[in-house]
Image (cartoon, rainbow, N blue to C red; front, side, top):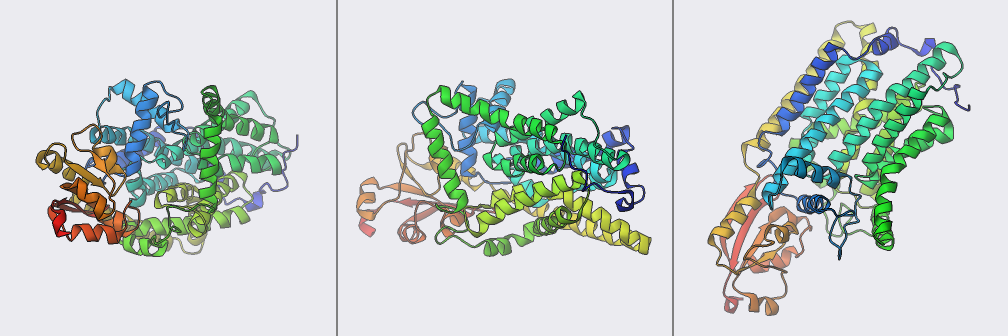
Length: 531
């Protein structure tokens, strides 16, 4: 066995009582009570107002349709003429199961909101996994604090409030770490206490396979999860870090199984060429060879301007990401404990992936979920270490400082949550209902944002592209559904100049302001002679 022990920690490296505190225990009633607090806070923060807190994002309609497709027996999802191969179907399988079990057969908004609620089960499992990971590393109290930070973080809360793949993806990744971190600690502690590496028992192989399989579920939900799951296992296999190489190989092989099953379904459907084109296109966007969206797209707002606009909502989130990224890098370089190095490497790889996309490739705001969740464990480890060193110098002062920081964070996050929940952010739902009540049957609706096409599918109102006035004159009268921020930030399918030209020659018939898109408005364009 080639499991390296040269980097194992010695007794001199071990803070007094630390390993005794973290290995003391089996899961107890205290843990159950603390977990109940974490899960209760996680769901209590997210479920109220989930129908009105965040306006509909285009991908939510897309992903609900894929879940319905899987429920109807299509893997890969989509239609026979247009399979959906951009992302693997892990989350869509979960949606299909939920729809079957709970009889979800709604259309449009109701289906989206039902899947938002379904996603909160996975979010609660993420909180459980984080608690277990941090408990294994530094104890119960830091695990509780980490769980509450996750529960309250405003960026995380908003991310979890929409049907986006990152939330479900990180659930499986965190649960995988919850299985593998104690296994890594077992071999780390055994090497420290006994000298040579511990023998691998059958239960260790099972744990490695189980953790790897959970990692595989993450990759089968979104390919990019490989950076924070499979890549650390591959590094362990090459270097001898973390686990005996035999167990690293078992975990890595298990991580490949769910995606291999997906590829098998694709191959049986004769769609391997289409899958290759979809994945190479995705890699091109990730690498920056093709840029159509994100911070590097033409005329797109910079990440700095977006962060400044949202700092009053996500200030603590940005602080957690920055401090957590620095803590992960420091821990990766300085620690001799393999379990800490394991979570640190995963966090650093997540930061590197998203950071590269921000600087050179295609990275959108929701991808920062691959940063904020992985950095929580290394941030907790470093924070606990600093706290203990400070207490050795001055017994009570560190407690006061930590208490003040946590209180300030809690107040900031509570104010941000209250601000977002105090004003409904459901302009598109209200605009849709206004048009269904007031627009004449057969009236066209111009789509500026992609979700408008999904909203009006199967209704009496066809959706049409916005084109030059000569062509649009034949479509008059028609309605335009405008999302202010989509247009301003160049995410719409029409330029700001074209939209402004038409709105200046139209009547505003509906308007509602929300946090997501700013002004959501409907204009009636009726008389081409005024153009």
